[in-house]
Length: 318
Image (cartoon, rainbow, N blue to C red):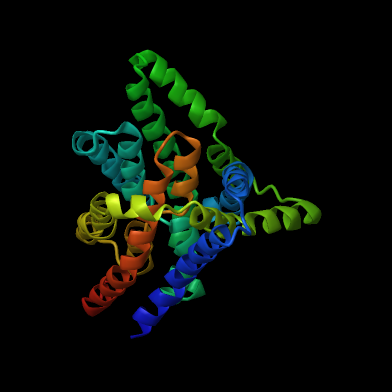
């Protein structure tokens, strides 16, 4: 019951903010143009600063655990490769295929990771989770950029060499990648921001999730949701059940226990990242489908996360 109540407390605000955004647009308080501009501000400023600060506040050098990092990053890349090979065969529209790939492999770890780990293990068990933030989040962003650049390039008929050059350029100039890279550098070299900048960046970073959810709600398309429910439900199943079962099972076989296994569980069992909507909107994907995958995966994560925590505790793995 405690796990269920906690899951409800974690995911309910996400739905509430989406509903508020939808209501604001319906009541003509928020215009479509404002929602579009808000999504751009989130992508180019608020989310990069949120990502920067999450890594910036992590002491990578002191908490580094090679086995955990390598296993986790390998799991993310493995998911990505499997999806890139299978999803385009099942989803013919390349913008939709790229959106589905991102919706499955990219989790809401940036927002849910630390709160969930703190709830399960207390402050003393946060080390593995904060460490994985510094490696998993940049990996998510780089792979998402690759997915959108390559798949939409296929649709426009670009040659392979051009797509590779475009992909590298898109990675280097992407605001989320830049935010992650700066966070890693600041953390490794223990560079601290002046108090004025620290407060300003913290305030802007705090806008990232609320603004992303409000603009997503304002642009939510009910008719598209009905027509694409099979795709979003399949993506949510892979996001919440199939890949967590495979990867967490592998982690158990490799000997991970306690906070380390808990960090892996949170990363791979969390619903689809809210930031995937903003990425889809800004990189030629299907924003409507992205928002649907987020909502469906977030709703059902209340059940899957609760069941997963209960099972891992029952077998004394965490």
